[in-house]
Amino acid sequence: MANDAAPPDEKSFVQAVSDYGGSKFINSKPLEAVPLRRQRAAAICAAVPSGIVSNWVGRVEEVNATNRGDAILRLYLYGSGSVFLENWNEKTNADEDKFPVPENSPVYIEISKLEKNELVRVSGSFQPSQSDCFRTSGSSKANESGNLAGTMMSPTFIFRWDSVRPLK
Image (cartoon, rainbow, N blue to C red; front, side, top):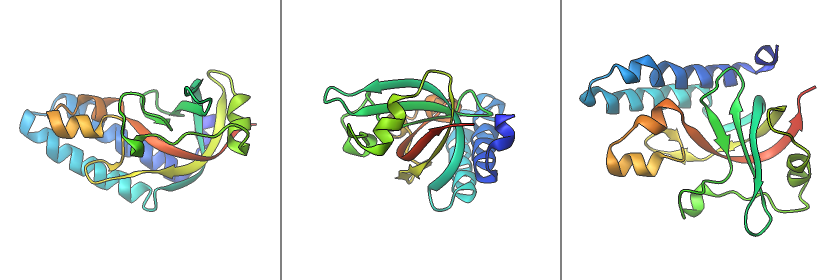
């Protein structure tokens, strides 16, 4: 039901990630992995050319807070158990991977009411990336190490929340 509520650009985005990250990637030879990543990036950019989305459907995986009390939200897009959005990558010190939601902001207030596994509608923006179209929490590491498994199989896209509300 909720997947039917997902807008066409969300469905296309999830399909692009799935098409290039599933068995196609697992069964690829080492020299095929980088071209697959480029093809996936092109498909992702075609699905969401502006990087700005509205009314996407997701399921809350985690609500947390930074040391300063800012909100952190991690969810997976509905229709996929392996495509995640989050506003805070704890695995890096890079500022471009951190979009805190300040206490008392309208989005913070909405996030604070959410429960794990709750279905939500979200709007916001992805962060650009040359290698993945949109920045993932593993983009930099994959670029340095050549290990693409994390960013291809179960990517977590860095996302700036503009609105988050329960799906009704």
